[in-house]
Length: 137
Image (cartoon, rainbow, N blue to C red; front, side, top):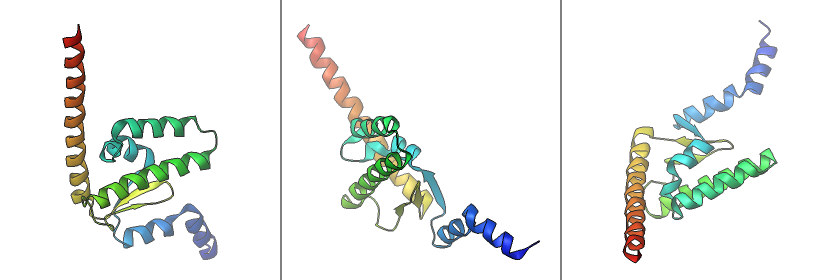
């Protein structure tokens, strides 16, 4: 093996970056789109906001702009969760193309609980809307 070639290939493949992230304590990572589609309801705008963001990002021609839009949306979810004290500031980090979780089990459990409440609230709003429409008939 040529040590210089192996070092260059490891650097280009992003192995050192991944090791640095793992050593800093962020063990679990999730791509931006699955994070946004799964936990978009946790933000203040809820599902309507996250679906609009995802659709806008899909229509975008530029890959850089698409990733930028997704990162901004994930940052919004993160800042909303921190503002409402659901998570601490160091439990969730947004990277270039992924979301990193420090204590994955705890953070995912908090996010899932928050998502479950949002689902229930959305279902109740939908039922209420339908019931008022049925009364009008």
